[in-house]
Length: 284
Picture (cartoon, rainbow, N blue to C red):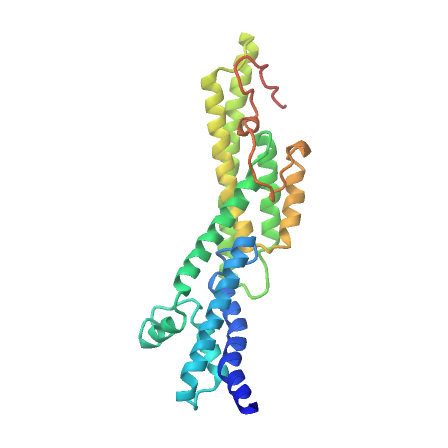
């Protein structure tokens, strides 16, 4: 009886126990820079499913194969199986990789779904953070604060000098795009406001459409800048980014980057929603 228990532990349990942490480390390495495994409930659940599925396959492989290959250590089988979910190199498509594909049967679908979920999480987070600004003056000011926040976090240990320069350049370029789009809206809004003041009327529908389109472009470029914050930042930075955003987003908006990000997008254009409304008041 004791021998049977020891055989079960060494053949089935040990490979799974060793495989689980190895799988998690490989997942972190595989999706580094692509998203956060614990960024949402769905992504965390998918990552857990990958770890459990891989550990289960390691247990099955250990229980069925090790009795016929006693020279293979159970722990080694767990390590090899967990390593199979790591990033693939160009030279790793041969027989060894094919064997790992058998051991991790079903993981390709889970990994694909996890990759899609991580991209969706990032897109939704950036969209929530970019929405809610009353006008492009506040949006531009937040983008400037965000740029300063990101540049302060470029010099992290372990990042090569060339990589730091590339990240700085990308941050600066994306911020310039946000600023250019914001200035385009500000120029257009000032022009519309001047025409409305001179003619004593409210903004026309075509003018409102142009304002909303310009504001939407500024929001879109801000999401590109926020993607860098999500890719190169840490989860602990999210609270700081929400604090920066709260300086410019009205408290009544009720969105801090963790909500559903929905609402009346017409209110974010900085102009009246209908021609009969009063014309907007331009800032000096």
